[in-house]
Image 1 (spheres, rainbow, N blue to C red):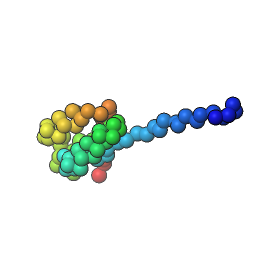
Image 2: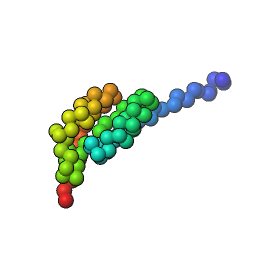
Image 3: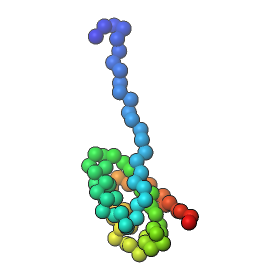
Image 4: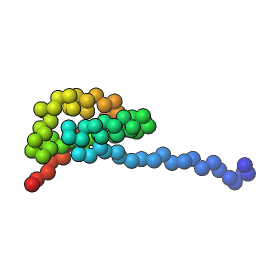
Amino acid sequence: MGQDQQWIQPQPRLGVVTIHDACPAFSTKIFELADELEGLDIKFNFALIPFFNEKQDLPRFPEFVDKINHTSTVKSFYTVFTMN
C-alpha cells in the first residue's frame, strides 16, 4: 500500500428488528422467526398484541408469555393497541 492510501474500515450497520403482532394466534411463526434471529445473533424485540381479536387475552396464555419472556436476545417489549 502506498503512503497516501488508507485502509477503509467497514461501518457497522445499525437496525431495529421487531417481531410485530406477537400473540398466541401466531406463536408458531413468531418462535420460528425468533429462533432464526437468535441463530444469526441478531437482537430483536416483540410488539405484543395484548387482546388479539378480543379473544386472546395474554394472561390466559401463560406458556406463550413465559416463552416470550425467556427468549434469550429479547431486550424490550411493547404493546400494540388497536381501536375498532
